[in-house]
Length: 88
Image (cartoon, rainbow, N blue to C red; front, side, top):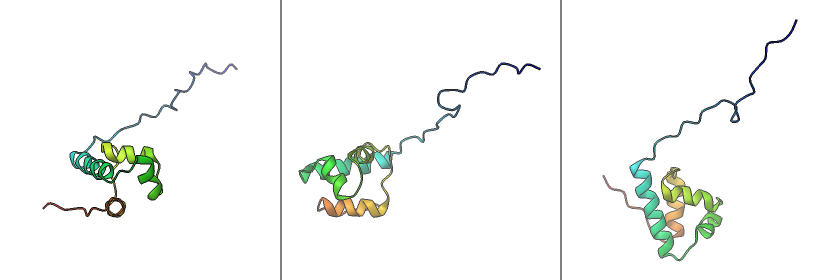
């Protein structure tokens, strides 16, 4: 008995990656992080090193691609010598 021909697997394993849309709030928070980081004279690498994340992660935070958790946001605000303000 001969096995039927099989097609090769898809390059990505056949899985489609669904990306969540970027949220306006995440973008606004990221812009604020970038603004205060630059005012403090810090590079993305320096800020990342202080918070045990890569500069690529800082880039994603600043672009709003990845959401910054509240605890990390407070630490970043402290590191740039600013306090986060919350609007109702």
